[in-house]
Figure 1 (cartoon, rainbow, N blue to C red):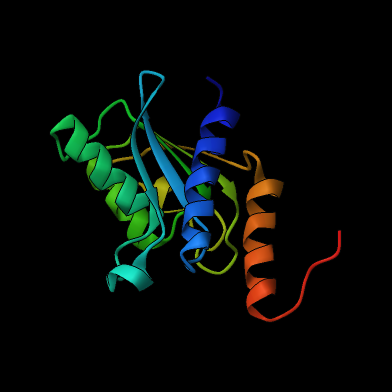
Figure 2: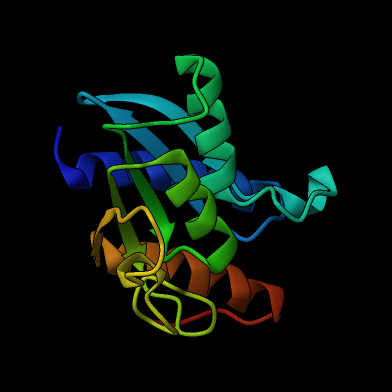
Length: 154
């Protein structure tokens, strides 16, 4: 499978979040070409501020792999990770992070700052952004436009 295929799986998770009234962000964890963790945003319904898509996918992968460390794993997420999620990614020792849309307000993989390039931190994942960025961004834009009571025109 390709990066785009795994990002499409993350988009499926994002759509689940949106169907629950959550901000539509989804993530999957991949090891050796197989999805070993899935997650979508659910802080509102779970009443848990840490229940971001990345954290949920890391928890699922950790449970399935019986390890809190995820060496050799790649994380695909539809939106650039925030500081909290980036910290969890680093602590899990994820090898690579692939994200879709940039987040100019809270993204810390290059948009606001780049925590993954901070030399004082002890783990550095490889980061690639922009995979299916238009599709990931459109899902988010559509969600927020609908919340505001208007639709976007193409």
